[in-house]
Length: 294
Image 1 (cartoon, helix red, strand yellow):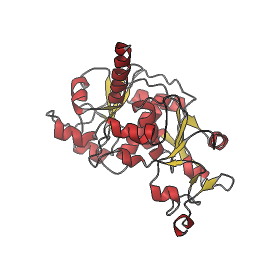
Image 2: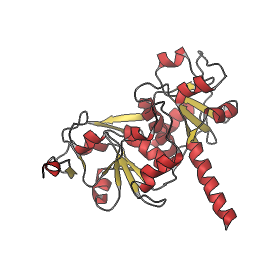
Image 3: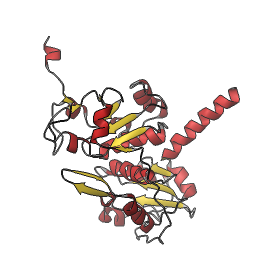
């Protein structure tokens, strides 16, 4: 029994470490032909210096604008774009940014896109390029990489992305986590391009940025578990819905829950508040100041 329990614990730890890999791990893997490194920064930042063999990709090109919001492109489009990046079915894909605004969220949304479309081995570099420059003795590169086309085949997972009707039918039945800041969640300030203030009825506040330290490395394992498993009383087989303003912030909460903690029934509402909060037929609630006036 002790051996079985130890195996479970070690398996969980290794799974979590694969989700946010260290600089040392990448150093050991970067020359492996199956390792594909994706840089999600802009071209100017990339050419100033990047990890050797990293391929520049624009995460925004994996989304389509639909009215007031954006959602993930269709599987056949993702497949074509992934192949252009040199991704194969057996690739270990490592994603990193340079610490620019929203880089972390571009990393998690890129990971989400690939996982939704069947990629089996996706990691985010913990601490990104800043950690790489501090911890690695391998010189960075200023030359661009042009990989050969890969053979990636999109196998769409229909159990991850959910729409407005699914969210509506889940109110009061499924825990939902709002990845926006607490003041936006409570309705003391508004989300950009969202008419109504507050949050989806019954949703819990879970600001995505609280899971990271100031150097943009993930908080330690115990803290992450305290936030999600103890704080929200979530268990391995629970269904959870993550949402935010427009899918980006929610993707980080989703990635931590799904890939780091192993809650494989975690879903994401891609259109999020840019759809929900711009309609009048969607249940919302907000902070009431009267709570403190009594």
